[in-house]
Image (cartoon, rainbow, N blue to C red):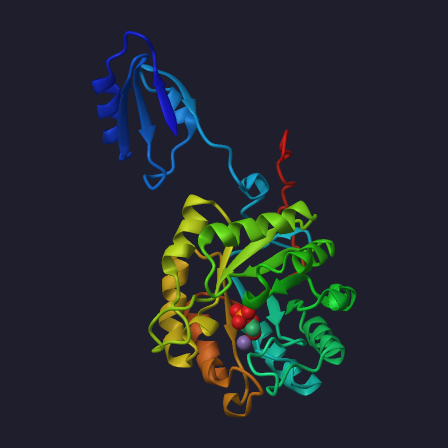
Length: 343
Ligand code: PEP
Ligand code: MN
């Protein structure tokens, strides 16, 4: 941000005032006077706050590269109503059978979860690994969710499955491997549901935000970011859980962000600690994998919470049994702010 000073004002006094507000200021002396800049890694500050400082004439700021995200509501919405937070999204990694997902749905509902998760189409590193039961599993997921009054979220991997996923999913998950598959983002957005956008393994925060902007450009009503860990040099955990990204996204960029400690840790024993840390950092909810018999799971067994672990963690974190249908007192989702001139 560039701060121009009023003729005759005292640049030292303005610079001192900015520094006292915790801003990182640089000073340029030119033939037309002094200009101060606020460096971007300093705290976020509004142009209004700066203009109100004695001696400041005007403030110039670069245009935001993601104006639609800046304007989208931060509150999470489920079926068009603002959802209670924190939100609990839980279920198995993969939908393995009608019975399996129904049993997990019963536990998720009893724990106070709002969304049942489960993959029908599984992105697997090896082509020989279990890749999901496809459209059949979408039906099992939808039936289990309906039976237990849960909403559901499942991953869309391919544009050709968009219509089938759109039939059942309240939220559309875009997995980390597809965060930058822009035509898939467009197809997901056109379904008109909130998109749960997982962070790619090596995506910068800005790349992730811009992928979210793609979704909004193509008509998604909301983008919910999901931090699931990033690639690091250290294989001790499956991924490096980026708590800073959760804090930045939620507190500085004011975006809705869900934390997925399951895929970050890759092992169930770390999930309680990472869950607490994520909520403390500002996550609006958690995505947790759980399985009745993790040792027999067709994918991601080591990170699936056992039933008693899931029950005690969700109880500790304060989720209580509650229906997801809108109730008296719950507010309708706010309409996104209308922006005047968008690029
Ligand atoms: C998942 O949610 O099961 C999944 C495959 O996630 P990610 O894209 O984060 O690996
Ligand atoms: Mn998984």
